[in-house]
Amino acid sequence: MTDILKPTIVGIDLGTTNSLVSVPVRDDRPIIVANERGERVTPSVVTIQQNEILVGELAKSQAVLNHENTISLVKRVMGGDQTWNCQGRELTPESVSSEILKYLKGVAESYLGYEVTGAVITVPAYFNDLQREATMRAGELAGLKVYKLFNEPTAAALAYGLQRNNDDHLLVFDFGGGTLDITFLEVKDGAFLVQGVGGDTRLGGVDFDRLIVENARDYFKKIHGPDLFADPLAYQQLLSHAEKAKVDLSAVKETRIMIPYVTVTKKGPLHLNMPLSRETLESLAAPILDNIHRILQESLESANLDPNWVGSVVLVGGSSRIPCVRRLLAETFPTGVTFRYDLNPEEIVAIGAGVLAGVMAGIYHEIDFRDVISHDLGIEDDLGEFVKLINRGASYPLENDRLFTTTRDNQTEVTVHVLQKAELEDELISLGHFTVGGLPPAKAGEPDIKVTFSIDQHGLLQVRAEEVNSGVKHEIQLTLHPKRAGNTRRPDDSKTVSKEPQMD
Ligand code: ADP
Ligand code: MG
Image (cartoon, rainbow, N blue to C red):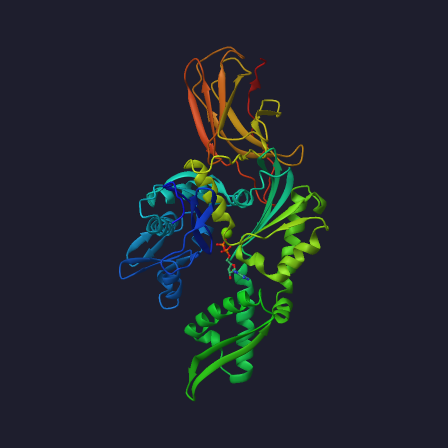
């Protein structure tokens, strides 16, 4: 084994379709650890079979026979209140995710030969507080101390060491199994600043698989008659062969889908043997490519950027290997843009998580990078003006406070309306509000109401307000993360805060 300084912290990419674990190694990039099947990528699928919990390929391959007890795509419902009842066991998104994390913890432990106690876990940049908290809880349930929830696009950029290069403007294009995540990152003085996010939570590699499956169904019908979709086993086989054919066609121009005995009729067994070319797949996929093109344009627009802003495109996610997707990107951005795909796009997020895990374990010293706040944060005063408490570009964790006061005599309560200043100069986004009640009687301007903003290492914002003399206080936890394209909204102007920033 290479020189490992016994790290007990690992990096985990807890993906929608696939998950990976990486272990930091001194003087080298983190290693992606293969599971007991020898695979570096573990499907994010969980099932219960005879009271035993199965994770990964085993769970995925038995899905067809045990559909109602198999859970996949759990990441899509993190932070929600969906539950599943599997063989009498109540499962939550957290508990399902924790099974995947436990499995990966075990994978790393068998490789290292000792216990792993902590992890850096990646999350999409747009994950809100609820989704982040659910991910934290999943980590804890798996017996892992979560050292950091790390934004996936930042992890990808860190894997390439892009914080060390000159200042740059990145488009992180993460096209996975079921999602497309687009992030614009500014690299400045070793810090990553999120400039905008966009994407589609329902667009990914499975959409290509579906096209192939439908094509094969039509082909089979024409030649043999029966509808393969009517036979669940045949359908499942078709799905997995279609995915394989798609992956092949990223490397070769022609392939063949061969499934002997795919279905049985009264006349006997039937076989599927269908040629498929890259050209055919690309013509079938034209609507998907149009979609990606539109999403790219919308994401640029909503971040107020034009294609010339982009200096480098970082390709992430297995589906970013598809040649026509790469071609589309090359056509969308001007020549001179650097395309980064030298690292394995499926592994890069886990590598970035491993780099940070290594920094936290004291294995990597020299890495200087910071995740910074991408928007000004503050509250609304009684005149409806934005009063800033935290500057964009500040690295976190951090804390800042400011004194406010009342505007009326004997005012008993104040409302704190927390705002984020969006990319466009005047656009304010309401993050939430709360009321501090029960203030002791006092003249207008006398109470000292201290409002404190603190952002922890996971990027979670907490806002506290306290009347300093009486000790009356209130606090809330808020979402600080960038909303996706099309999701921004103006603050509700129903009730403004009756407060005035104190001159100091
Ligand atoms: P996620 O982030 O959603 O968990 P991944 O980044 O692991 O997912 O991407 C998984 C998707 O990538 C799957 O749909 C898989 O079929 C696809 N994929 C993996 N390798 C290739 C390839 N060489 N060509 C095309 N698609 C690929
Ligand atoms: Mg991913």
